[in-house]
Amino acid sequence: MADSATGSILSALILCGLMGVLGQGARAAVGLKSASRLPSPQADQQTEFSAAYFVLSLMIGFIAGILAGLAIGIQNILNIDPGDIKVLLGIAASGYAGADFIENSLSIFIPPPGSSTASSKALRTVGASPADAAIYAAHTAALANAAQQLSAVSDRLTTVVAAPAVIAGAVPAFGAALQSVAPGIDRMKWEPALAAGFQKYSLTNNRRVAAAIGQFLVEAGGAFEEVIENMSYSTTRMMEVWPSTFKTQADALPYAHQPQKLGNFIYANRLGNGNEASGDGYRFRGRGLIQLTGRDEYNEFGAAIGMTAEQVSDYCETAEGAAVSGCWYLATRGCLPFADAWNLAEITRRVNGRKMQDHARRVRFSNAMLAELNT
Image (cartoon, rainbow, N blue to C red):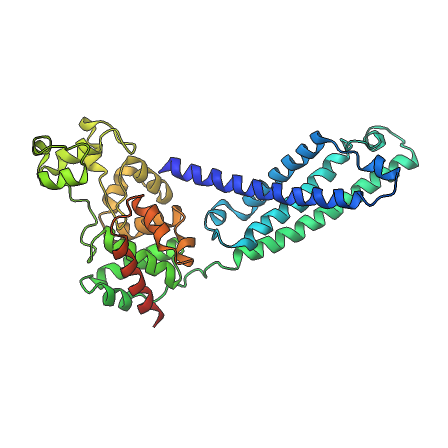
């Protein structure tokens, strides 16, 4: 959903900012330790502590961290394995070097606490004195050095982030493995459809493919025969699935085996849908290999592929649409790094929610698929 995607982006930027603060904090600690070794009275003059200036420095580090995140790319940040400490330390280093760059830029115009105002005058006074010119030259040299450090950190960070990336187009040969794990699947129908989704959304290593198949085989059935949510329920089944809504047989009876009526009722005024009369509930019921549900998700996927929500509802009933939408969901919900780390529980949580229904089956299918791919 759009709110979920926005929250993920905001969380990624905040993480980058906090790592920048960490880097800037380390920089400040190093500076204070070095300054403590200065002989008096030089130490008194150069180590005057300003709480306001320290807070400003941390704010600059936060900004530098966010800028580093934007430079790397939000999608890359979202896909970072949380256990990959190298990337996080790289962002912290950008806070260290980037803050140095920003502060040296500002120091030409706004001198730090305890410094002479001569440097700022040097920029505003025509015919500045040799002393002022020397101060200005020192600031410029410091700025150039900071820029060089930031460039070096940026190069190293880009290398670290790019290192685990999969090679475009390297979709594993998975058709035989899929048919071995799920013999009922029509390989001629689903292999090209899945390949299109894997390629488009970077499911291009064995773990990502296996984790995806494990989820798909539960969400859409063992032969991918359930790409459209079946809303024809018995009264007993409705009471099991929606116990708070259908508390008695009498509550459920008006909707028994009436899929359109049930869909419009149960999904009304939720997930971006209109009221019962709008028909949104049934129109935007679950579709695809990971059952996109509700107008909001249909709109979000449609925006990614250039379709309206209504067009997406038809597209997801095709083999290609069902496969591509499932891969899109896994990629945009941050599941791929967890596949790389083989953290299947987190993937199930992101796909199915806190209930994690049929998690054991998802794990079994995923492990079987991975074993076949690795042979």
